[in-house]
Length: 539
Image (cartoon, rainbow, N blue to C red; front, side, top):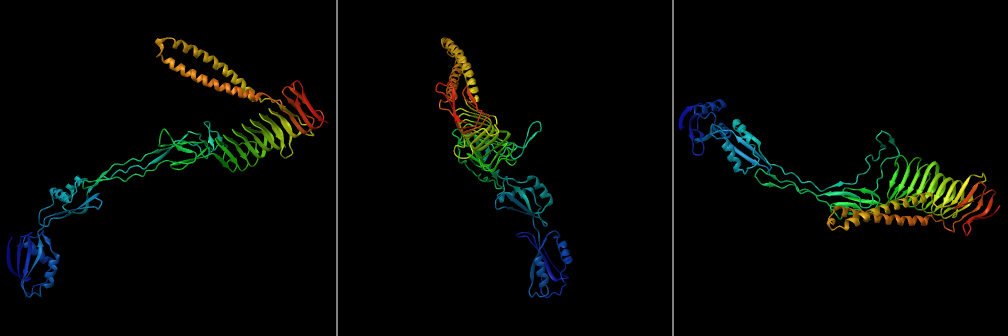
């Protein structure tokens, strides 16, 4: 393609093709030509005549030509079309996680090839995550604008330190318990589950580091650093000596959990016992500010203090029980304490107390077993006992025994039948253990006298069994000694009252007396030789 001169609708002009950089169609216009207005059809005809039909049309040069056509004073050349090869441009995101491709189509020149795309990617530094299956489609289309061509592999983030709760609370917390037969217990809501010392509470699961990703330029993308936190022991908890990632209870009580910490509440405080709380069993002490409604129960490993009344409910404590009001038993209430029991009044209930029983006003129609002293009205209050049966190991003191209605009232100073039953059980267990110790001792002696049997595995097993038996036997003998001391009625045990009514029967040991007439300043005590009790008082 060269150049040519001509006269036409634009006046005098010359068309030439310059190929120094890229083939360019140049139109040179002479001044003073009156030619017509340049139209798109005219341009198309010129391009076709000069073999540049598919070339890139330089619209800016065309615009200048049309504006300056009638005002030229000297000849001027206009580069109105160019022959262009396809161009490939690749861009990368700032974080190097994606790359985009733009293909400028060919205008009369070489079309895009897969090789051109590969070279452009290489020049842009894109070496990883290239979407190879997309390249063939781009070549076929010949053009695109900002399409994704490479995608990084994102890092897999690590996991933060987490905490696993090892102590499981009630599986029906806050809801009535339903048994296997479908029966619903409205009194069991499972709200308060206690732990004892040594209970494992939570475990720390250390953070994991994560896996790096790869950017489109081949560089590694580091994962986000996981958050690490340690265990935070609260009151009554500590780090396990066996495992630094485990938190254990160092005291008995109610566990209160946060994400990485637990504290142990050694004293549980409640507003009352009813259908909102259900029955409560707690290893520590318990304070109940309100009343205990019928049918509910409280059990504590420590002391129990109740500010309001107990109504037909069971109260059990390994320590003492302090009832600021009292008990309306209705024949359905049991009060059990290993320590002392103190109340303002007790009515129609059963009481077992391992210590002393102190009542201010009244014990009415109750069954009482007390390993200590029963004292009624000794500090203040009416101090009356009527109806039921009172059994105390160390004596009974009251202001009034019985009533004007001559209610049948039994007052005894005698060992606890429960302790007596336990003594019999312990004696039987000691006999069985001693028999077994003799058997194991004979077997050990036989094995030990034979040198060939020194490695006999039975020797190790029997030695351990012998040690365990001796340990248990010593423990039972110590318990038996303690029981025997408790079962001995003290010589100074007394039954005393300011006033006694007919219907009252008093006894100390095997001696007893039925009161037939009212008495004042009553004192019932054993004789020195324990043959006959001595009752004093005046009708």
